[in-house]
Length: 277
Image 1: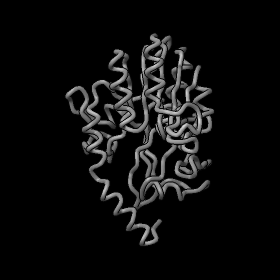
Image 2: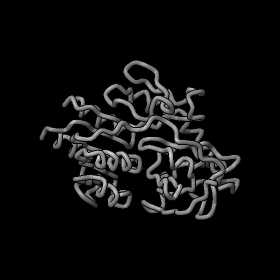
Image 3: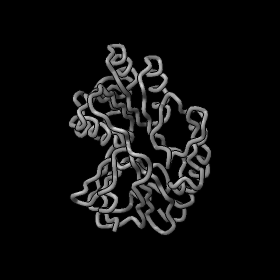
Image 4: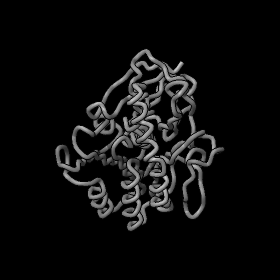
């Protein structure tokens, strides 16, 4: 179970795609839901939203950035190796409707989460315009798949190495000024989602964001993934991961995500020194 049947390195090896055998999850999973993976007995439980599911093959696909000890352990797994545990599908699926003009905005590995949502909305009959961005061309992922999942695709890079030079919010503002946008879906780094939500609030356009709070069990018991939404405490794992971007307290979320930064760096450093990585 949970054997890797496809592995692909992206963004110069800093982003890794794994297609994993998980037939029971693949049959039930819907766009927007996530799984929790564990590499081995000593590994950390990591939540990742599924970028793709194939019920016929019995596989799910996850895409992650190598940033610390646990994701580096993941990256050492090769085709034929297996994750010790994959639990899911977890979280609430995306509410998908047809007949809307939807703008999907993705940044970094958030594009992987955005892809099945954009595709689902297009299949349901909505007109989908997508904007994806990265710091440079080498860090941009899933361009071809997002093109297929959209009626129109805009690409932005901070340095102008591919597509338009600038931020995704600049293109989004132009689209909002043209009018006719019924909904925006924004998934990516928290600061990006914050500024997209501030922008869409100016135009009174409903905005959906997918949050990535610190998570442990994924079933609502630990409370580690709590976020403030509309002045109420919500759990990212069971109430989300998607929320109304106009109601999320992004500043609080950013502080919570930074809570264990030093400990994470220390853990990664110790494992490298011991040769565990």
